[in-house]
Amino acid sequence: MAGNLRVAHLRSPRRLQNLLLGLCVLCYAAPLLRIAVVAAQTLVRRTDQGGGDLGLVLVNARMARIIGLTCGQTLASVVVCLGIGIPLGWAVGRRTVHGSSVLGALLLAPFALPTVTVALAMFAIVGSPPDSLSGRFLLIVGAHALFNVGLVVRTVALAVEALPVQAEEAAASLGASAKSRWLHLRLPLLSPAIASSALLVALLSLTSFGAVVLLGGHGMTTLEVEVWVLATRQFDLGAAALLAVGQFFLVVLLLLAFERTARWSQQWSGLGIELRPLQSSTTKARVYPTRAGLTSLASWATALTLVGVPLGALVMRSGFDNGQWTWSRYVDLFGNKVVPLRGVDFVEVLWRSVGNAGVATVVATLIAVPVAIASRNQRVTRPVNRATSLSLGVPATLMGLGYLLLASGPPVDLRSSRWLLPVVQGILAAPICVRILAPPVSQIGRGVIEAARTLNSSGIDQAVRVWLPPLLRPLAFSAGCAFAFSIGEFGASSFLARSGDPTLTQLVARILSRPSVVSLSQACALSLLIGTLAVGAIVLPSGGVGLLRVGGRRA
Image (tube, rainbow, N blue to C red; front, side, top):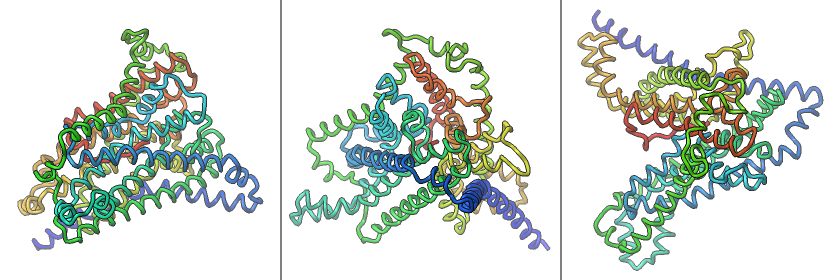
């Protein structure tokens, strides 16, 4: 009898866990399926009608330019990020740079900033939006470099640290030249890391929305932006769904290639060579002091130029006027004196955005906690990792379009609901929280949990005494990341935010719609405020613990 009660006691949480996992999968599958259904219906309906209007929308010179621009900015971003990131990653991984850990953290810090903050930082450098398309193209590539170089440096540096010292020493003792060691030893071992970082940058650049909209203006349109234009400007949801399906397949292909490179990198563990970090005295002795000093100087100069110049320009544009610091731009914002924002109560928008971020944080946590607990099961770990990777790779604009189609009914029209946007933002932020919570959850010993069950501890008592203490700081950090993502989210908001209830990021776009020197300063001030809220939400709850170990989603 007692055994049957114990089995029932164990099965009940598992059933609840499976139910919650099913609901989480539905949150991501439902909008994607809705897009696929609308795309199929549009294709069938317009094909029966001759398909002429569909051809005019999807097969024309404009679409060819859009595809060319999308591929061009993605390729340029990958080349620039690899060109900067590989040398810096080598220097950081070889520990030839003084303060290499601080350098890596500095380069990775912009990845935590909202898109609007980085985009306005690029505008702040040039002082005004460029008139030429080539100038705007360079700004977009620069924004992608500011975002993604830190990821390349981190990936390459970890691979460099794991290079086999014994193999290098053996090759050198056999008379292999430095060039030969690079081509036949180092490069093959670093190729998986370089390939995976290139694919990651390509994925993030392909799905970039906020940077292209804010920096590109009307003349620069990518596939991501065209989906938004078709859905919200031309109100052609069918054509938007068709383009979204095509973009989704591109994202899936990149994710599959990224997973393949990850497996490729694991194959080197079977070489039979003991891998250890390049921190031995023999390795350091080969670095001449003068060369080490020049390497440190060049690395820090590159990092400060890449990160410090844009962010410094953003601060200068937001507060300096005629060589003196002034708070007038911020006073104009809170005093509702910004001309492009007439009729908008800024304080109300601020509090509404903070409230939406709070709701999104709760939703993300409620989704992430059961998923992270379920990932303790080895049979579930790999599917959860794959689903999380796919969720992080799917653009926020694609999910925004899917939920817009779902909310349009039937049976219920939820487009006017104020809860739609924060709930969707919470769903989008949940994979970030899962990535943060899964490692500490997996470290909780099964023996402790079984002992608590044997002592007939209630579920609440187990949660408070067993689960909560080791997860308190990870929960605080994941909640801060979810809040920061929501407060700076731009993609889904462009589809789901009601016209009368704009978000903070949408106010930046409104200010830039009327370009002038004053408007640029006001937009810089607002984007700096958004960035400060996002960084504060990440750092304050947990002291920034784990910031360098977590990837995230950009809108």
